[in-house]
View 1 (cartoon, rainbow, N blue to C red):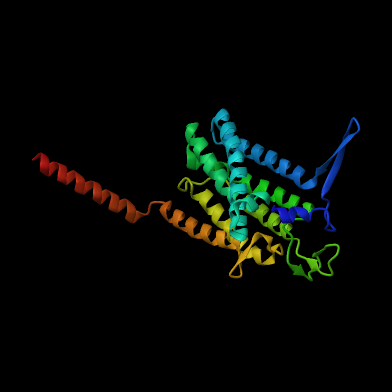
View 2: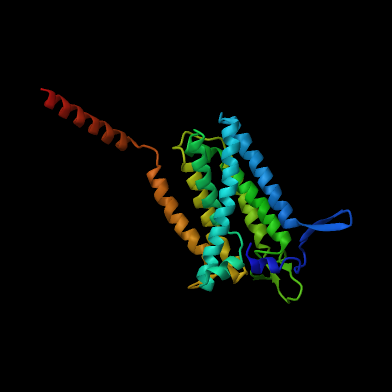
Length: 282
């Protein structure tokens, strides 16, 4: 959520930016709905990841450590990518740092790298760990998007559909964009929550990232907050999504299951090596 988006919180009808207000000894502190749902998303995601990890036979202490570092890495990545995008827009690092936000693609990359590093350090199978914990990502992300909707950020483009939401001060209605993505994330969560097959470790995680990038590529035209940046008529998220899809396609090719021809080539190679060793020994 960028700084300009945060400025809009509480100004849009149909939203509920403030969940409640806590009162203590004469002091009061408002609790934002976005923040509360973000905390809920992290809690539900961590619980689901732990549950799946323990069912897969992964060690509990290692899972807790890996998850903690993954969350930290996710926040660092989300902040770093946001600053990078704002720097490209503004041409000034101090200005970019003065208007921080969070970008999910950065969270996905930072969290995955941190989880992989922590899993390796904790002696967990890295690719298997990523595959096992995967369904927690879209579930937590969907809850976070509902928080975006109630907070008033990440709003959609103008729309005349019956379910479009109206914002005060505007004569037009807009797509409830965060709810679109939340619904599709729930679909991805169901699809990728199926029992792990005997596929090559890591393919499921890469396939999910590719599916999410394709989802963002298709949904981005329905967004209305141009603050995130548009270059050559394409949003920064679309540019990132296109690069992610290309990278995932390459990774899936590298992680493809062994075919019969691969087995034959491998056997032929071993046979050639054996003949060479015998010839040199003779």
